[in-house]
Image 1 (cartoon, helix red, strand yellow):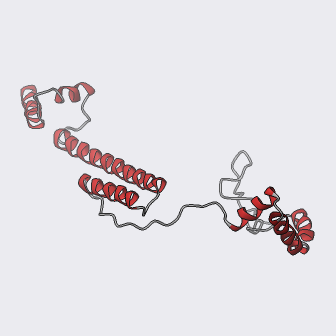
Image 2 (tube, helix red, strand yellow):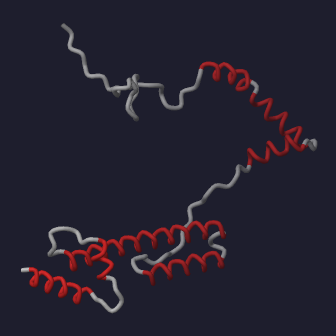
Length: 183
């Protein structure tokens, strides 16, 4: 009796993402047979078509001229940008990096669009650093204030802690006193 291998399909009969019924699949970059049949005559006449388009463009045909120019000078894409930026570990560093980007725009090393992209990257870096700092501080505060409790504080307890004029040490002492009075 032949042993069945477990099906990679889900209970609904579908394949999970990244898996198919044909693991070898179609090779990347392969073309349909119909596409190949349509391209064959064009490839044979490619030289004469290019020469004709150039001749039409030289004779003043605007569409032919546009076609030739678009092929000679494709639309510009992002280029690699090289400017010296300081490390961005602190807010002061990020400010210096943004100043360097602005200076590079003013000096013509960067286009305004490139500078805007770099400024957005620096802003994202700042947001991530701020979020990490807030998370770290919150963990430290919770560890300091509530580390000796077995359960998380009630929402009202946190609100009491955040009253103006109250600091973490005063709150910890109040909790300790309440605990001793309860005994």
